[in-house]
Image 1 (tube, rainbow, N blue to C red):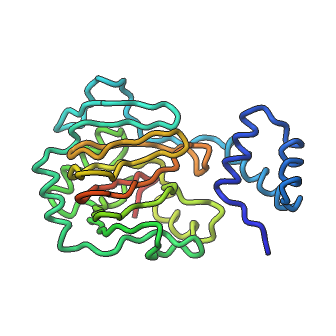
Image 2 (image 1 turned 45 degrees about the vertical axis):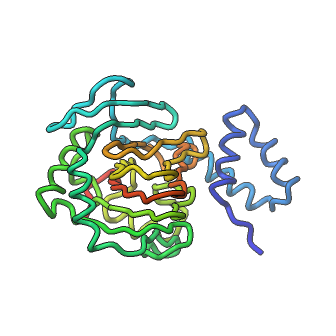
Image 3 (image 1 turned 45 degrees about the horizontal axis):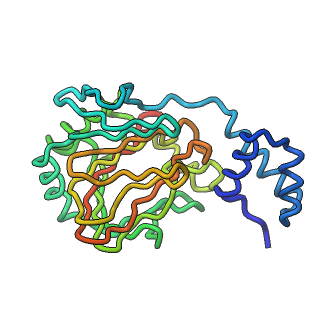
Length: 272
């Protein structure tokens, strides 16, 4: 059976390199653990090349906690900032009325949420993601246009570089298991999705209600949890498609009530 190069393995190799281990010692440790030498060498080359590749420009919120960010038609509170990974928690990005309007607009169009299939880049239903969701077309209504322009101003990133706004609904027990939002360059299906605007370089998640319990956005690599609060948002960026960005994240299970969120993914180029 062929040995697979997983994100977990890539992340471990990067951690060893960052800790000062030599390539020879890492290779020896992998061989001792049962890895074939050819696979171990390929994994090391792939993992370390991604770490040293030139970082991409990314969206940003260049402010400190406790400050106010300009979102054009609205001022947004910067509640918390983490530098590595880049994570910014924002207060009051949407009004409660805007949250309710977005949910009401999305509700009739909801279906089982999908993920991108690694083999060919097509969408598929997967057990890792148990929410329901839908996508708005970019600029399809006055509400969507207003929110997209607000997000673009806040993040210093063109509206045209954003995917359509996605609304997700999590009922009790629903979750999205740990994953990365970038497209894995090693996956055969990535070429198809990258043609539509290049890599994803940032994610903005807006909470459209406050669940009774559960539903946090978690970052397992750094032990961070962001509580879902109506109108608030969390933004994070990733300047290369690699686990070294520490942007592994998950939507923790909703344990009581329900959770509604809106997600905006930012691409490096114009999204078509």
